[in-house]
Image (cartoon, rainbow, N blue to C red):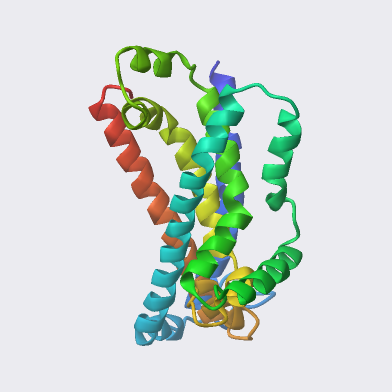
Length: 266
């Protein structure tokens, strides 16, 4: 038993080290832009990258804020759009069900370049190009299959008996959803929302093409720096890019856990 525990600890320690190693390298470049092979550790430090972040705090905050806004709107819209089809796919049996589900999940398989060009042409015709609603709709169309699959699994994780019981007690549609289905769907919605947020927040080409440069995005701000020779500034902005979704996920996890404990479900 102790040997199995020791193996488990070593396994997770190795996995953690592999996951954190790229971040440690980025942190090294932030502190020492001249760090290069064959030096094992940086010889000189330079605070220029941190000074750049402080001097460009407003543009960085504006692009981060815009990315968070359209990513969160994408999560909310995809959740609203996927509720009905997810409930139907999880609860009902009908002809060609696998075909319908496959067609609904197809956008996740489409190449981003092909999808972006087609959506851009359509949005130019209807006046949604270069607008925030256009960016949100394009990201939702591209990423909703992740939310749909998570909600289908969420509905399948609990039986229809809860809904039938609430209906027999006289609960209406809204009451059954808000008091019965939604609390049980939260884990699936959080899982799907996490993936949708990451896809939307990290998307570069689709936001750049549909937004036309008028919708600020942090990936659009970061990309020119990644392709430049200034590794120090690119590294500090990459770490900042990672901290935003990580901090948001921690807050969501704490809020969901606190809510479940308050209801005696955790």
